[in-house]
Structure formats: C-alpha cells, structure tokens
Image (cartoon, rainbow, N blue to C red):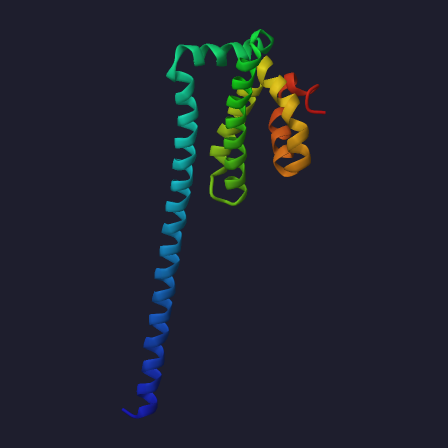
Length: 164
C-alpha cells in the first residue's frame, strides 16, 4: 500500500468522523431545544400557579376577584386597585408567553389554551373594564401583542364593541 492510498483512507475516515460529530451535535441541539422549551413552559406554569394560589389563599381575596369579575362597580377604590393589579399580573404572564411563542419556545397548542383563558378572564364585566383601560397602552407600546390580544378576543361577540 502506498502513501497515496493511506492518505485517501485517512481522508475517508476523517470525513466519516466529521459526519458522526455533526450528527451528534445536531442530536444534542435537538435535546437542548426540547429541554429549553420544557423549562420555559414549566417556569410559566409555576408563575401562573403562583397567581392562582394568591386567589385561593384567602376567602377575602377570592371574594374580591369574584366580585371584581361580576360587578367591578361594587368594589371600593382599594379593592378595585387590587383587582386591576390581579388582572395586570395575568396580562404580564400572557404577554410573556406570547413572546415565548413568537420566539418558538412554546408550542402553538399551549398558546391556544392561553388564548381561551384570556377570553374567559376578560369576558367578565371587570375584565372588559380592565381591557378598556389598558388596551390603548398596549396598542401604543406593544402593537404586535395588542394585535394578537385583539385577534383572540374579536371572535367573541362580547368584545366586538370594546376593541374597535
């Protein structure tokens, strides 16, 4: 065997090693992407659970949220502030998850579940009042999220007069 043949065999073995290395790296990137997505959803669900836990923490807080949704005008000024702060927590979570979805970190079916939650939360009298107060701010400062928010709400007849 001459040196030329040995060199060709070395090139072939080197090429196979490069292909195997690239395949291994692709597999590692795929696994890392899956882990990152799972971590993203887990952190979102933990934050969502923390907000929901505050509602369930006391009878008074549960009453305030229930009344805020049903009849926001029945709340005192301080209670109305608490209720709007509560809805703001959800709005921040929804926006965060939307941004993660846009970045490809959250599956579209998970976002669809959140869209349904947005509609359920904002379809109440208190939710509509909150929406009327914050939508102009979101439209001005975060037009892409505002457009998504409006898209998920405009399908519901109760919102048609509030988002245009």
